[in-house]
Length: 227
Image (tube, rainbow, N blue to C red; front, side, top):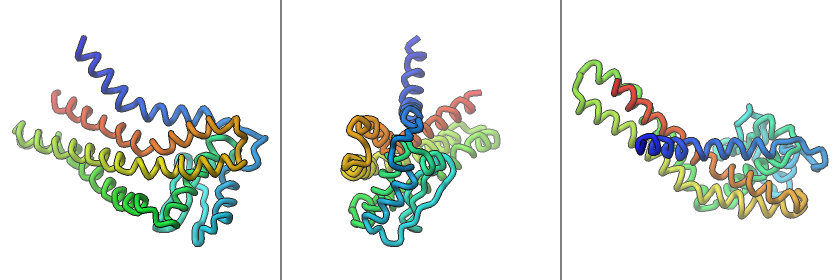
């Protein structure tokens, strides 16, 4: 029974944040014809308002909400680009805020980009180590060698999570020091700001939640090795 409870606690830790992010975005994704514009229209307006020179806006696939500082592109997924919803305008304001951080040479943001590149490299390394673990075990039948490979994969996933946690203050700055004050200027009614705050919190936690979910790969490969 204690093991079952421990397993449930681990699953809640791994999947809970991701489910919370998804449910929050879905909750505030309802169409609101009374809003002055779509997420895409707000982003375009803010790019002009803040004179974000060289920054362009594109429509991406669902879930492609990001700011690419190398190409200076703000991407909004189709639901946020075309819809008038609390989620759409809040996500648009969040991504524009990253462009503002870039324009202002925000120290944390500039470090964030290097960390994100490192996180991608570490996660790929960890995933590759986990993938070859069963093969190494089948070839060598040496538990110690397999354990080392598995630990390398696990350390890669954990290091990636650490990088995302280090970037969290930058995400929170974009959400609450920039995006929320902008929306409170009149882009949203006061009654809608609590919902926008929840969406912005979810936007800030997106990468951390994804990194936590990736940790499940470790448990999956451990289960494979025990067969």
